[in-house]
Length: 238
Image (cartoon, helix red, strand yellow):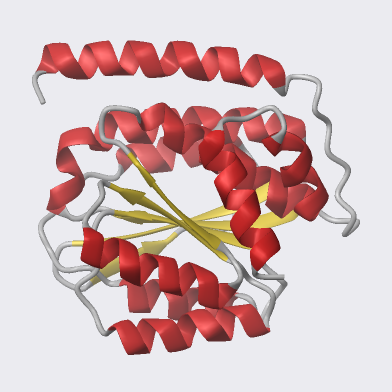
């Protein structure tokens, strides 16, 4: 993608997100749990995602900033890249800190490490319940059966996995769809040229983590087909 193309997409995405967020400006969420929602946000930072990485990170950061104003939300960032590098941050409730950390990550060639991400989520949930987990990636190079087993373990602790796939690789889509279903979550693909789609999906999951199924169902009524698809998958897996 050329710099001119990136600029055009970024401007279009920002404009659409601004219009989208106006719809939820008066969308306060009171957590039924009596505590802030807890969300793990995991990213594939390997080299295949480099072409759209900066733009996507900025849009993701903006959506989390806005979602934080809608309801109380604690977020932990997890990412992998390079040779066996998989890192997690402390739990953050300041969106500025989250955006700063997110945009400081750069892509580095390496294989996927989704297994380590799911194992981390299971360990982390031993301390306090986690309400939802987002994973954003474009490929899967590990054992489908092993990852499926871990996804099933997530369901046992009521931790749904929302997988947002960059691109439309068929083999990856089939695997991601199974993992999401096994966990009680959802899977959607978004286009490289429409990163704002990812923003709306992230906002939906942030609302789910904060206010539960009722919040995301209300939000879906204001949203496009991708968010409605996520809600349909959650309801199907109940």
